[in-house]
Image (cartoon, rainbow, N blue to C red; front, side, top):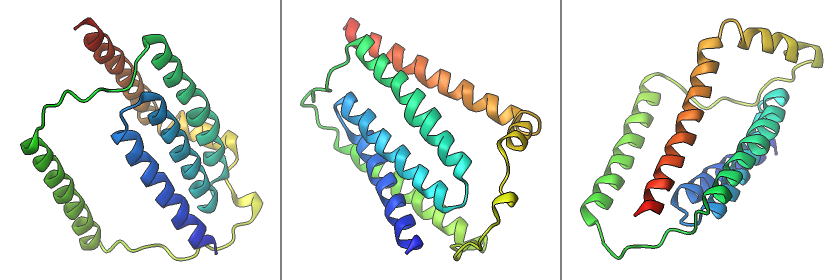
Length: 170
């Protein structure tokens, strides 16, 4: 039963992430991203990582999505209007590159001997990492990774702001 819930949550996360990318209305895209974040939190719980699931809800579904909604409302970004110009070559090349990338990724996974994990074994509650130890590890051994993610999020926010301002100026 847990495997079915995990597969359903993973499918919901992937579908709504695709809807977020393909959506033309920014508000609907942010709401689709929220659903994807909640589905990811369900997968984290099923992978016996409740602290990461809580962080997913609090940090991403809470703070980051509120920031995105605030930015969209601040910039008064409306739904994208199709310009009527068809780009069949770009559409074909983009679709082809997605299929090639997926094939290469699956081929690399198969060549590495990776397989789907089975049912995880039950873990005692005291064996789960506590937030204090996780925080120490995050801010010592993985500090560079943590800061790289924060810089990446900041760059994405600035890029969205610049793109929105450029479109409004035209």
